[in-house]
Image (cartoon, rainbow over all chains, first blue to last red; front, side, top):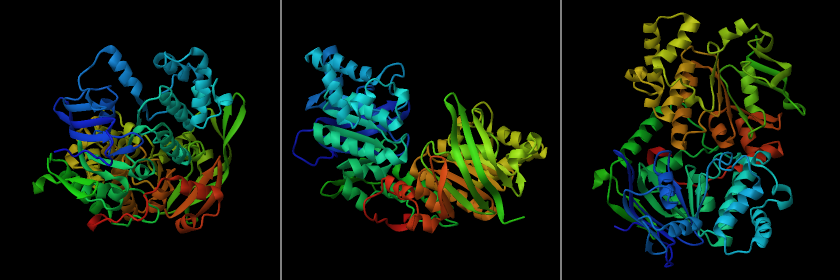
Amino acid sequence: MKPQTQASIAEPVIQLENIQRDFGPVQALKSVSFSLFAGRALALVGESGCGKTTCARIIARLDRPTGGKLFFRGQDRTARGSGNDERLYRKDVQMVFQDPFSSLNPAFTVNHHLSRPLQLHGQDRPKAGRGEDIMRLLESVGLDPALTRQKFPHELSGGQRQRVNIARALAVSPSILVADEPTSMLDVSIRKDILELLARVKRENDLAMLYITHDIATAAHVAEEIVVMFAGQMVEWGDTATVLAAPKHPYTQLLLSAVPDGGRRFVTGGSARFLEQAEKVRALSRPISTVVEQVGTNHFMRALAASN
Amino acid sequence: MSDNLLEIENLNIDYLVDKGDFRAVKNVSFNIGRGEIFGLAGESGCGKSTIAYAITRLSKAPAWVSGGSIRLDGQDLLRMPEIDLQKIRWKRIGMVFQSAMNSLNPLMRVEAQFHDVLHRHTGCSRQESRARAEEMFKLVGIPAHRVGDYPHQFSGGMRQRIVIAICLALRPELIIMDEPTTALDVVVQREILEQVLDLQQTYGFSVLFITHDLHLMAQLCGRIGVMLKGELVEVGDVTQVSQAPAHDYTRKLWNAIPQLPGNVHLSGALA
């Protein structure tokens, strides 16, 4: 079984193959396989606790899988490498976290946050050019260097801080960007701007991007491909447009039906029915199933365990 | 006595800070009718939560209500002695806040937390509280035998439902819900809010529902108010605010929410 999403013949930058992660008796990830390609984004969607962040942590090497393999540019990098290898890997894989308020050190300026990674990972570059690099980075994320460079995090809004975080991630010219719920703590009015910024930096830097979210509606704005997860399993995956237009797995359908839509008022007396339906779908989707069905060109779903 | 349960008139709230006063709520007036679900929308910092806290006089320094009135059934809550107000909180006005699922005491069994509220207002015995807790659990869709469990034994969505259950136990006339489902995923969000709607239809309480998500608000509320920088820029019924928003900012807020592309076709019972 090789249910990885693949849309091009290009070699994947990162490939997860049957990744498992157990926390004691809890199987947080059960055989997760997908690939990230340069210049493309993959959205990982699901409720809290479904295993999205565990995937991100494994890719960023903040956590290690219990089983399965992690390939980086075709090389098996599941096991821990030498110090230098690990440092180079980390330079290639950068993260943007959910909370823009806690992911910057309050005691240091924006300039410091951007010069540190340049200093640590860019030793081959002349020190004299660092100032220019910082200016260029700030401009590339839509911040005015003159206004923001000497500011402390508390002097910036949440959206500006998230832009600094993105600039910090880009500072070391990574090939992979993992964005874990990058907009869920931001104001509604600026979420779209940050999503557009992510899509742009991905394009401009030819980044392979993993976009993690519980908000399936935003996936369409950023990612070419989507993976819907539930209880540690990939339940449905493929081209974002196809999956969203014709969801096949009951869990994906449930998720889409719950996206707030002002045009669809709640009906009185509907709660019991929805609750029952949701419970039924969760119960159907939870058991481990190894059967994957191809339902479109690049559209797959996991068969429900009952029909195995 | 009018048809309005809550009447807010010319409310001004300041934050007293070093650089002078910051007016967080500017001359805001709106009413909530009996049995009405009223939505207050706006982004962070627009003053919507500041109003929620002011209604039950829970605003803490440096917040200062500098003018206006908030009347519940004609009685001005802002000028009422504290002792009278204590009888109104929970009994007549229930509150569910954003991090409500973390507002349960982790060291107390849930039934004891019901007893806290019920005993204070009705003087009932532990047995009576337990019976009421079981009844409320059933109402919000949690098995009644679990009233003796601790908060950590429940999921986030269940904890939020427990807070709603405690809130409803005294049959309040008004429930203030400030971003009650922001920390939950969309499926659980819909489960809880549909349940709130059903309970509201059964018991007829009024709701002040606060969120930044206009789409969600339009699914639940009858009337909507939109706030921008402390001012209420638009108030109208849900159809008008959704289909013909009068203020530019309301339009901006509608467009800000990333939507699913095109029409998603859902099969069967989920649609």
